[in-house]
Image (cartoon, rainbow, N blue to C red):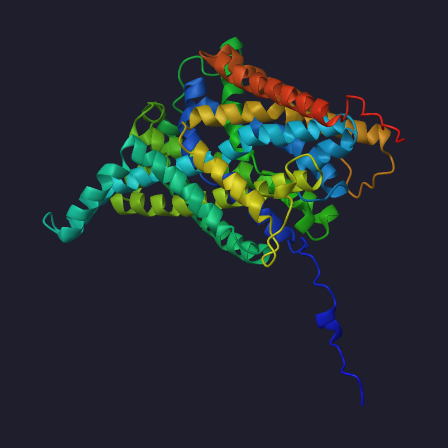
Length: 501
């Protein structure tokens, strides 16, 4: 009798889940740009104009672009050389030395991430609510115009708009959006890449409609309504430009988003530099034209009044002035889709950070596992999502300034110094992409980041932002050294082995 045969495939142990390289240049660029545009220019143009008190504040877009492009070349070289999940976490760990200073820098990255990355995601959710608020306020009159004042649907809309526009209703809506994004990301990366393309197309259509409308209906008297002494090169101008640049940088955040997905990118030596540079150039053009379109139709003096409708939902007011209320409602809905794409892309990339740190032993190991079927870091995703829900209960402009300052010293400046160290002391590391005109872009980016970091210190109540930045860094250092002492890791001596017998 012949012995029963065993199916080799069923007998072999199942392969452990792993990240797959599925993202090409188009997918990577769409993820970057969806994150970068998002809700940013639709909520930050009025505060940017307020920093210098007039349209001259739009120069901040070019100051921010110079910093972003210079820093983009830095992350392109690092991303091409060290392509792995976690992006900047990996850059800091490897460039400063995995077993010594790199261990500290990697920890500090995770620490500041908890205080800045989740705030960045939450800012998108809060921005979405500003346009939802405009939508709900405008909905009852709009429906009454269509169905009549006694229509039941108008009554229901009016009843619903009340709690939705209440301050606590706004906060709970922002938290609900963060929760919805987290649930939407609970799936395979291939499905997410397809969805990001759809959201990216929606983003381009939304911004394109605004730009074309603004250029066609442009009022030169509004666009170039500069106040007296607008371009006087004095101390106040430099401080205002620096504060405006911080808000602009918020709009550029995301050009390195593809680096967080380095373990899922095809041909990273080619895809990452292309995605970073193309997304920066594209967003610079789009955001500046958006800003110029707004000031060409809506008076800037109206936009800078904090609490006004033009301040919180400038795009809706803009479209309403040109086409009427139907266009204001339509653009509000389109901006919500665009903002959702940004929050979606942010949470997608940032959910890989605790996962990468856990695999490396720099974070709780419980987060270093992938979903058995979906092959994505589900525990890390839930952690980021819950923190974003909590952050959604805070204010917007303060969140933007705080998150930028909390990130500059550790991440942006740290990466630049790390690249210089890597170049000098790690010549064996492959460099499929090299910084152009080395080290000029790195030095330029470093000066730009420090200029932006120092600017809030000279504005009223700016010391609170500086305290937040230095306070989080100090707390992170204390936490690291306490844990390192307890575990007897660098810089503390390891526990000597006790001889037996």
